[in-house]
Structures are given as structure tokens and as C-alpha cells.
Length: 256
Image (tube, rainbow, N blue to C red):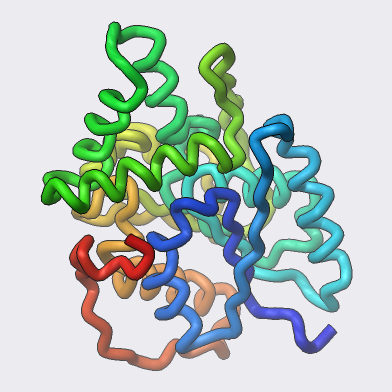
């Protein structure tokens, strides 16, 4: 169908959507980009199977393969879908997804809950510093609320009682893997773990800063890497230049 987008951003973390906006706005200047959301209530089980079925119900009506993108657990869903339905995926772009793709910030949270004799709120406060760096007290409190909302409503393979690991493997579609040099969740070692699984068309890129949500702080840098990757798969695609500030202050987040 001609009204389907060129690229589809997956979002399974409703609380963290504000961090995706700068990159999506940048990409939308060049191509038709849509956002696919999956939300669940606290009464529903964490089931990637349900999300996969719903995503496939959307993509199976497209008349052509599509570029899939996702950050963190949303990227994990994109990866699992690309492995199951490669015929529907033009390329796969993963942000903050390591060679063990199940590792996300929630895995770190639950790991700390099991090891440290302190409250969940205290651990979230510590994670705000690790994920975003130093922030003023009002911004840190707002970020704490966002993380708590994600714990309550975001799809994740982990719980307080059970954390999973997914064996590294290749994917048959062109792959771009991006990370940040100062990300404590998916560190550069996790990114380098992709090396044995990369093919000739695949790429890796490491942002020099930005921590776990580097795509929020450097949307233009991440967007240019993504557009260049897509152009390499389709030489006729020539991204136009756009002057965009590649840094954002935390105070500029409209949802805080």
C-alpha cells in the first residue's frame, strides 16, 4: 500500500517516548517515518509474542519491506521480528542494543534490587545519574518518575524474580548497530560483541557521548548515521542537508 511509511520506529516504552522525539523529527525531514506503539496494563503479562503478532498484523499489509528502528527493548522487539519475518524488513537499526540483546536498563534495576539493601526509589535515583548524568533536583525527580512509569507499563523481558538472556546471533537483513561510548547499560564491550555476526552490508557506530539515551542528546549525529546507512542500501536515496542543533538540554523535554 502506497501510504505505508519508508521507516517504522518501534516504541514499547510509553514513558520514554519523549527521548525519541528529536531523532524522529530529524528523520522525518528526509523520509516518511511512522511510530508504532505497544502499550500494556499492569495486569497483562510481559509477552513479546503478543507484541510480535500485533506488529506483524500491521506490517503484513505493506506492499514493500520497511526500515525498522528501535532503542533498547523496542530494538529487541525489532530484532526478534526481523529474525522471524526478514521478508518484511528492508533494514534494521538498533540503538543501545548489545550482542546480548535482552540487556536493558530494567535488567540493571532488578539486578540492583536483588543485591542492594535499599528501596526501589533509591535505586531509581542512582540510575537517573547513570543514565543521564548529573541533573538538577527538579529534572532528576521528573526523570525518576519517567523510569518508574516505564517499570510499570513498558514491555520488558525482566522482572524482579526472573531475568533472561538471549544468545547472540546474526540477522539476515542489513543491520546498523549504534551505541554510546559512555553508556553503562549497553557498554562498548556489548557493542563489540556484534562483530562476529556482522555481514558486509552491516555497520556499527559509537557515539562519543550521550549515555544510554544518546539519540536524544545527539539526534542529528544518530540521524545522519541512519540516513547514510539507508542510502548505502539504495544509492538513489540522497539525504538532504539540514542544520539542526545536535545537543538538547533536559529542560527542553516537553513532557517533563
